[in-house]
Length: 400
Image (cartoon, rainbow, N blue to C red; front, side, top):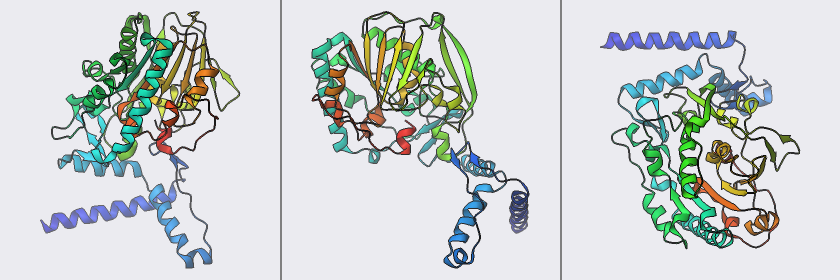
């Protein structure tokens, strides 16, 4: 046993020394696609920085970032833990079929914030239902993978059941059908590729099934799956869940569903002057790890989509990033879609409604957990006219 341990120690030292030498020979990398960040550059050496200890700290970071096959070493370490039977790392479950699933605990949620958000939503829904009619207003909650894909969870995994909360919400609105829980919809398709393995978002197929449920709820005819051509755009997507552990999973495929009879669209972001003619942004998605940015480019406070659908209808879509690959299915149902993401702005809803008198329909679409954790929804229930100002946001908001 002692000889085996000694042999393993020698192999480790040789690999460590060899890796360090190779790291000095190879050119430095500037960016890590896996971690979606710039890597440390070799620090400048000065007597002052050496004496202060600043140089040594920066050099340690530099060596760590530039170490030969760094990503592979991390992956190897996690795989070793998997072999030993560990099932979750850094808030991520290692599921079956290469699925990585975000682990949620009750400590992740503030009961006071949940109650506030429930009040904001029910106030908004009751008000808009009076204005536009019950068939024209809906809120839909998208379950996380841990709820929808219980078939791939580790046997011991703890999950939070939010369905009772949603049922309670339904009792607080004037018409219970205004709020729709997509859990059963998604669970009924859990053998299909409806969520990315390495990201928290649903795939275009998952979004399609939600679109079909929305159409049924609002009395519209949904397009059949056969009305779309499925086009593979990327086959190397490692998403935000993978980014938490940098190991496990398997590359995801990003698809778009091309309608056989598409309508022309124009897209305007509130923080840009340029007008775009597509809902898809391949160049943006090629930067870094977030291939999901292929859909609608980024999260912005207000995005306006106009179409040539000639329906005479305008949709107000209050959303998080799950709506970004959902909205393409709506373009043939509306002449205009106004997308609002309150993580990035704080215009009073009353101001939005009064300045867009052509609104005929309303949809609120959120991932359940992200909705409950959202700290920026107070203006949703503010039906008075208010001043439009942009709010600061953090990296978690950017990732949806």
